[in-house]
Image (tube, rainbow, N blue to C red; front, side, top):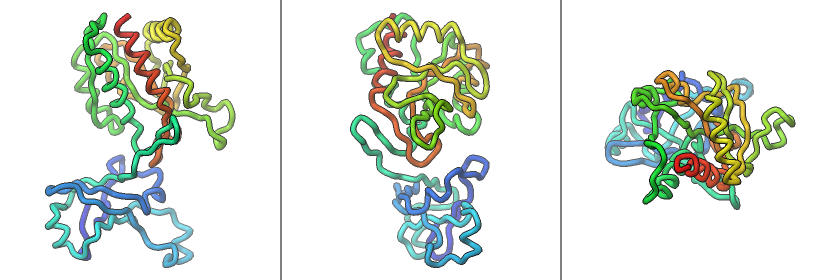
Length: 272
């Protein structure tokens, strides 16, 4: 990130190979800048549609043409707010509910935290039938960095929690991705990197069936998870994935029943 003389923040990198899949979706959304003196609110902006010419209309929107306006008028004012080169900028929309559905940013992979916290609460006073470690890893999208360190723990079994891309909306042709919101967590068989452990898959399915927990079968092609690092560490690696619509877009949707049933599946699996 750099700062213009008139107080705008210029985005230098999006952190994933300088690519962003939905640049137009950023414009007009709320931003949050992580400054040294506290968080600073702002908005992602670009040239107004009333002011761009025909040639510019025909060109894709590059990230270099997106700025962040934090309501200040000079680089000096920005510096006084504790904002400097390399201050982090995130988009910051509200998370809202639609009945039993919830939409917001980064359900991939915030939903895993909700599941793990609720699982931990339900295990208070309960003795699992295994040594259980609940971990949150970082930088999965840029090379499984956190999971690579976690894998050194020498775990026998790993159960990654990540989103399961759902295909139950009209712009998806029928049958291409038959995962649906509200029909239970996905027990994955393989993804774009490798096949998950069949022994553990059968145990998870048996647990779900015994306890009448709905679940779905899944194969994800353009997809990967922290399990790639865990299998390299010697674990029987697996994936449990609550269905999520519109993954890798600014706003994703999940169903609370799927999160609840994911918690139930994990609970019964570790206490059986």
